[in-house]
Amino acid sequence: MEINPNLSEKAQYDLLLVDRARSGDQRAFADLMGRYRDAIYFMLLKMVNNASDAEDLTIEAFGKAFKNIHQYAPNFAFSTWLFKIATNNCIDFIRKRRADHISLDQNDEDPDRLSGNVPAGTPDPEETMIRDQKAVLLRNVVTKLKPRYRKLVELRYFNEYSYEEIASELNLPIGTVKAQLFRARELLYNILKSTGTRP
Image (tube, rainbow, N blue to C red; front, side, top):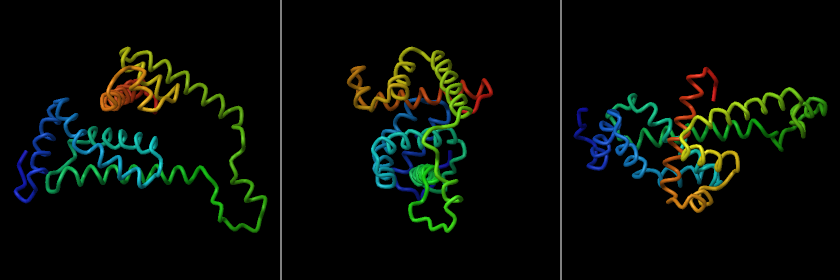
């Protein structure tokens, strides 16, 4: 990869890591994540004001960046590209979350129309069945993971443990838990994609 002389030393070092990551060097991925994880996390925390959501969005941002790393062009810093991915992903998350809630300041003359927008307290039977089927499918896919990844996914997504609780339970550093969960999610995504199921 050609180095852009206008980039800072830090950005030029990032380019070397990106080049290695494109060749499949796992250590380069880990180094890039280590350099920017905290900065991305704190930026997202300001946007969503929820530590758990910020953690998940941080992992998602790196997942998207690493999956599309071949699209990165070195005319600007890798960090600029990464922060843009993280910001856009977070904006999508906030939009979806807002769509799930009725606007409290909505002014509607027709109470019947208004009530049509309020989500019911319980899902209808068809929704429940679809959700249950997805849960069964996900559990079946999780059993195909290596034991260490399987345990992480079960604790995080089925038992709803925090990262700190998982680290304590498995006696692992939090950084390792996050990195392995990121890898586990990537493996899950690939398994679901190969079976033709949308994750």
